[in-house]
Image 1 (tube, chains in turn red, orange):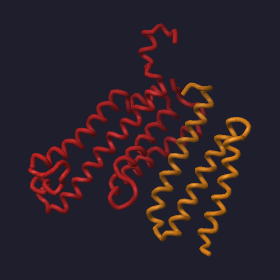
Image 2: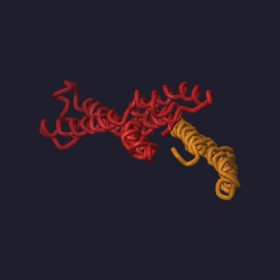
Image 3: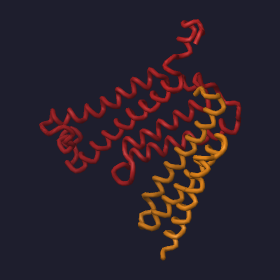
Image 4: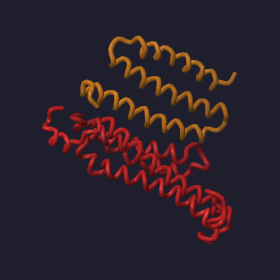
Length: 157
Length: 87
């Protein structure tokens, strides 16, 4: 189990750096269609900020911010956004992920609806990737055994 | 010859010296430091590539991501070392 680090330098640097990493991740997600990046890359950076928090501040603090349950729910929620927008386009009579059909719902011209549709897709992908990245690291670091499970096992691990 | 290309090639040659230290270096601390130095050099090479291709505003984004992930990678490796094999 990862415990909080004793080094105040690492803790202070992480505390200062994490908000900037998260803002930068949001920038990468939002600017995915103008510059390098997109939903997956922004999600990875966003997940890396949570991983940095878990490494520097320990498992107990990190579980208050982002637990295994929250990561599972958020990954499903991101996938729901993705598939929901895709299915909404089918309901409006287009192909899967045919964003131009969303113009009737969003009340904008089809070109703008395409831009907004792909932004929604990238937000969904970003949330899902962030949660899955954190979940993978969480599972690897704990070995699938949470602290409350260790008490049930009698601590003979 | 383009000066950015020249400096990029020089840094590219220096990466191999760090790679030697990362592969054969005695002890894990040398390896962590070498990997971190390679990451920093890659960051600068990316920016120089941006100048060569005249699209530096795109390569700044990539190199910033590289800097952030390199930092997190180094911290993780150091944490792994601190906890003696249990992460």
